Length: 389
Image (cartoon, rainbow, N blue to C red; front, top):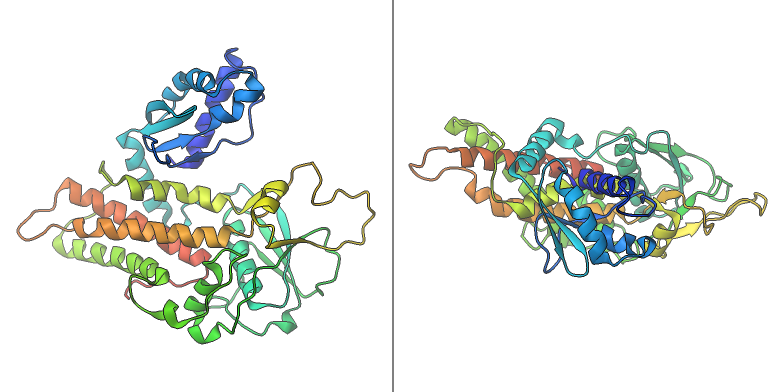
């Protein structure tokens, strides 16, 4: 069960409590489910009780107590604890972990993709600058993985750098337009990150793209040879190395005559990061107000010649807009997955005269799932995921 699915389960619990007359509130559109913070318990936590307390006219603890039995009946949930002012901490049963690993291995690098944004087009206007070009490309890939389309408006004749992935072609979700930047494109957002301080092309395609997307849009990117060093201090190396290691243990397991088989195991950190991956991709869009607050330095309103009566970006009516921080968020999430994977890998293969056991097969399945997420995430960043490094 992923955080996205848990979020739906939380909303279902709220809806049932409202239908039963236990709560008198409007069911929210979304419920935030994240790994528990300091002092938290279980696999995930939600602040839905704190969110509903004021409209319900009750304390957060009381709302949490109302929701707890409804959440206990959710599929895959084996425990619900209330901590702090009213946080609901959810524990998943072993079958949820097995189902997650199986799903990732079936979906492969497309795990986390959906059609949630099908039919939606997001207009993004890009200045003539290499970092803006790369971030727009990655944003389009991530939104495309959710079924949406990004309409990138810029003059292709002024592109001085080609940091698009090898092989050419347009990724799913990208539509390029040769129009001038001062054209009215119906209120699209302008992606204006802090520019690259120097030409990143000498780093090579993969390191250059990583150097531009890993920092948040409002942070200054470092264009240095550190991105090429094959050491643990280089986040890009750790991500690609972890992927290559997952492929290597699969080959070694085949040589030893055993295959992966999902099963219960104790690897909460890695499992949590893999389960959270679809949520990270789903943050590619947000409401206009939320995105403006989060990326004020990266977003600018596009000029428009339309009548003043047209709702502006600051309109109180919520609408979905691209979140320009998602490329950086994805890159940092992959670093977390890689670090947790590297902790798991030494225990995947049997040692010495040890025979392969169910635990080894389960760890191998989890390692393969982690490799699929790393490969899929790197692909969305436009970076190669080599099998050998």
